[in-house]
Length: 91
Image (cartoon, rainbow, N blue to C red; front, side, top):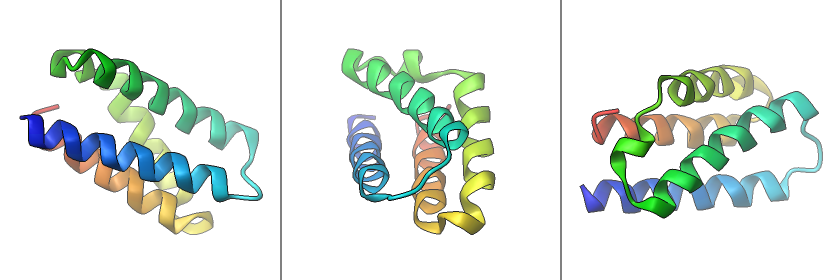
């Protein structure tokens, strides 16, 4: 399980870097991603996989992925990888 959590942390860092490099991102889209990232950061900081088990987090990530498919495919890909990593944790 530690391997999956480490993978998830790496994806979070990649997504943070990608968000910082963007020149334009609408406020609503940024808010969706930031809320999901904040929840992940908190849970990962506690290192409790049970803290990651949030239906609302998974829903927000899926909505974010759909929103970014066309406008920001790199972000959409990172979000998909994050969803996959959560799935590997059984979430």
